[in-house]
Amino acid sequence: MRIVIAEDAALLREGLVGILEKAGHQVIAAVADADALLVYTANQQPDVVITDIRMPPTHTDEGLRAAVTIRAQYPDIAVVLLSAYIAEAYVTDLLESTTGGGLGYLLKDRVSHVRDFLDNLDRVTAGGTVIDPDVVRHLVTRRRNDGPLATLTPREREVLALMAEGYTNPTIAEYLVVSEAAVRKHVGNIFAKLDLDPDSDRRVSAVLTYLRGAS
Image (cartoon, rainbow, N blue to C red; front, top):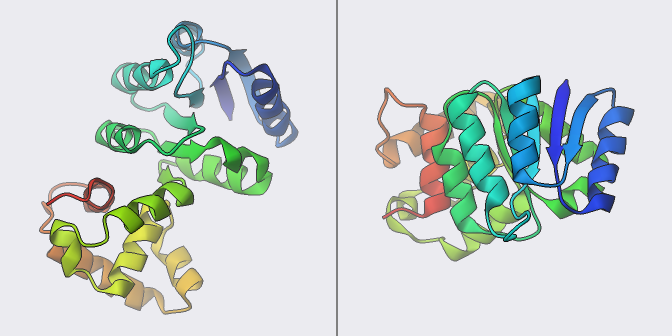
């Protein structure tokens, strides 16, 4: 796949280039700020953009805002956000921009687990939504009994957490050592209990409800 990277830390930027090129991907640009990211994305039309959230000049949310712009202008381009921190607002902003290509929110520590990082990248590029497992665990701990989520059984909550990490039903079944039919039943119960619009992408809506801890 063709990739544009935006990361202001030179060592991590070069590390990402090395990992991706060794895996057979083409890094068409590796830049240090959001403005350059937008320029190269417009000119090169990559398959996926990997961007830090905090970049120059203010080191706040430049990468996030660039990602939202890319999603609006080029919805088929997959986007992976990298962060050194668990920042809940970024998760919901990311999911709310779901309109086309895949989306991911990964902690930078995950890059050191090369196989996991590449697997997550493949899932996002294939159109999936992947939230870092550490982010999911953090949110489920804080929001265990919020609103409609309180109606879920422990197993349904476990299935929903795995959905939030980007896993498909067959993979969830393998992870939990249950049948795929059992997983489908749990997913159906989750959709019903969260009262999701049947005309929406209910899987994404369920994950968004889960991560918001909506009441």
